[in-house]
Length: 86
Image (cartoon, rainbow, N blue to C red; front, side):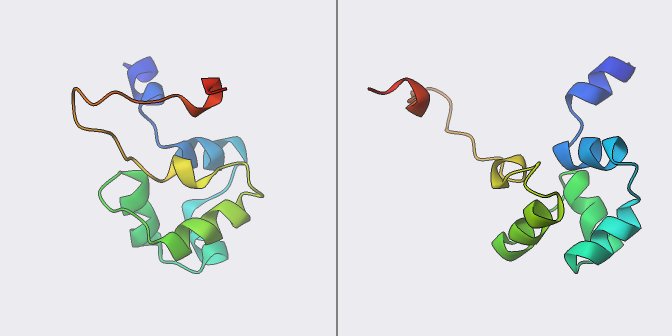
């Protein structure tokens, strides 16, 4: 069960644990509230672009905007891998 939770854990929660940071402290550093940060970590709220930028900066770019965006193409839509395009 623990492994299942870890694979689905929000990257920000992983970062906070690795850095031994409290959510309250990180929220204050980013200029947001603890309830907002908690909803983002639980994937119940998508952060604004401005807040994403502040969180990325607060992690010294260890996290990226992609860690906060969950854009998935509809089923059946082919996805081009930009890394392998010549």
